[in-house]
Amino acid sequence: MDLRTARPGDAAAVARIWLAGWRDGHLGNVPDELITARTPESFSERAAERMDDDTLVAVVAGEVAGFVMVVDDELEQVYVSPAHRGSGVATALLDAGERLVAAKGHPRAWLAVVGGNARARRFYQRQGWTDEGPFDHHAPGPDGPITVPAHRYTKPVAPG
Image (cartoon, rainbow, N blue to C red; front, top):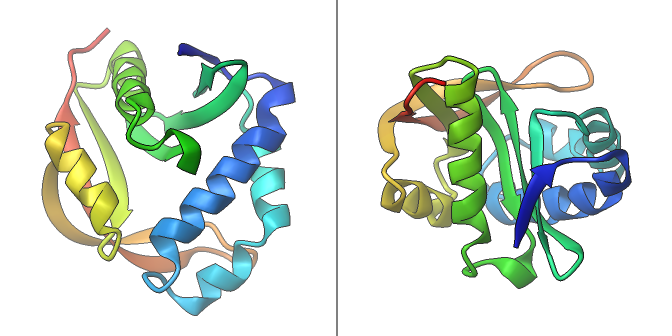
């Protein structure tokens, strides 16, 4: 497995992985308004916009197997293709995201997980993240932010 900065040519693979993973973890766990807003096209558009130094991809056998997107001190998106779940890709991406947050000078990283996404919540806890409890996450929507009940997970990271 290789970890590298995302490139424009990775956008389609990232969008596919993001859409599939998002549906796995969010359907039935978020407001209908957000489900309606998260069309396949929305993932394609958002992925294309995020092919920069703050998005890292894991490549296995020449194929994008997962990605992490970092915004300031937040690991905003962490997704792995279904074929690569349980293979260590998620752990490698999470570690890389934590290092990126630290390199930006932040002492602590955070991420949001919807309450019903039990698989993701168990994974983060196994990786040393702490559930600081529920909060209202504001996801971008076509007509403004959409309030999504989530849990805030945090982890200290060594700065830069």
